[in-house]
Image 1 (cartoon, rainbow, N blue to C red):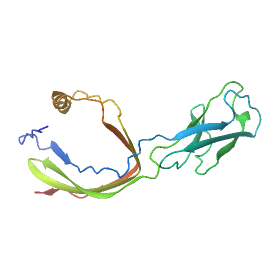
Image 2: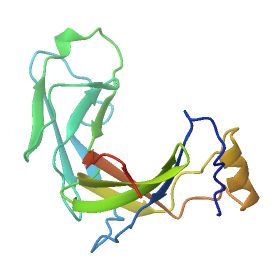
Image 3: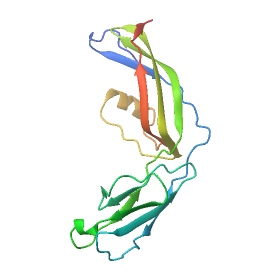
Amino acid sequence: MHPVYNDTAPAGDRYNLFIVEIKALNAPDVTPPTVSMTAPANGATVTGKTVAVSATASDNVAVTSLQFKLDGANLGAADTATPYSLTWDSTTVSNGSHVLTLAVPRGGKRTLPDSLMTTYSFINGVPHKTAFSSGGAGVGFHLGGAELTLGAHPIADELRSLGLPKRALMTMWMERMHGSFDAAVPL
């Protein structure tokens, strides 16, 4: 893609060109965690103030916590240690069918160390350089991914002219990210 910058744009416009180095992770995490409810049994009828709820979870990298959910809402705090279990007071919900599910956060223990990067931009027709650093934790990715949808915008039109969108080659997520930007400096 060859961006075209209009040097005669109004003074309030700003054009940004981001140049980012993407480094491969040493060992990509492409295996999702395995989770299983161990109690109560599927379809069981439960009553009382002390219903035992338990589960197992494993992953090739790490399982940092497991969240029990009742009808889609968190049931207590996330459990951060095995055995994953809690005692549920079933008298706090109405009689009838309810659904217990499990959630395991993505990311595990993989981190991205702080990296120094630079962006280049045109501000009022003058090229600028901005240094920034960023890093993250709870990083993971898998091959394949979401379908991209382009909206109505001149950049989207340019991407369409290049044959996009296409299915993503990989999907990446980051549970926690931090970063800081220096002031833009004219070149």
